[in-house]
Every structure is written in C-alpha cells, then in structure tokens.
Length: 141
Image 1 (tube, one colour):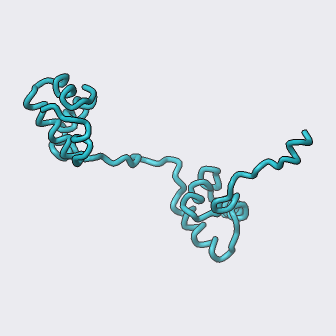
Image 2 (image 1 turned 120 degrees about the horizontal axis):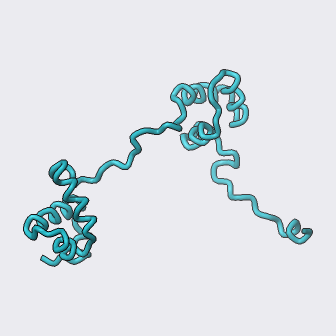
Image 3 (image 1 turned 180 degrees about the horizontal axis):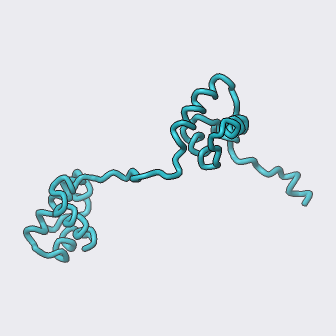
C-alpha cells in the first residue's frame, strides 16, 4: 500500500490520518508505516499517540487557540472605550488620558489590543504607508 504524496494530500486530513492508523495496525511498525506514507516516524508516532489517547476524535484537527491570554485587555476597559469613544470622538491619546484619569489601565499592550479590536484608531491612519524619506533630505546629509 505505497501511498503517493499527491493521493494523501488530496484526501480529507482526518481520513488520511485514519488510513495512516489502519496502515500501522496492518504493518505493526512505525518505520514501515512512515516509509509507506512518505513521512517521518515522528508524524506516525504523533497520530498513533493521539489515536490511543482519544480514539477517532483524536485524529481531528485540534484548536490552536491559546489556553489563556494574560496580557489581554480587561473587559471593563474595552467596555469603557466602547462607551466613551462614540460620544467624545477622542483619539488614542485622549482616550489613554481618560482611562488614566478614570484609574483604568492604559498599558501599550492594552492600546494595541484596542486597536486590533478596532476600538482605537491606528496612529498613522487605517492603512497609512510608512513615511518615505524625501530625496532632498537624503542629499543634504
């Protein structure tokens, strides 16, 4: 059962992993299974371990979401920005000042998170290119 890379790549990932497990069950050798599937022994070990631990459900893709986000902006700060920004029209600096005066955090990471959530404007505009150096300024140096 020598499986070409194209055949394995074209099938559903979970189905390919299930067939890899079946190949291992028939061959009873990690090296032989890896050789037939044109992959490394570490890959075969990984999927066999997940299959032993979780059964067929272990062959599905796992989430890549982090288990925790310790630097995440607190929900009360996000809510404060959502409440204040439409009414005041303040930009990032005034909102940071407002957060400080209200005794809420205004860490740089907090501001970055709020920008990514589109609650604060980016300091250079939505898609502003990097400022280009003028040729006149380069010639005077």
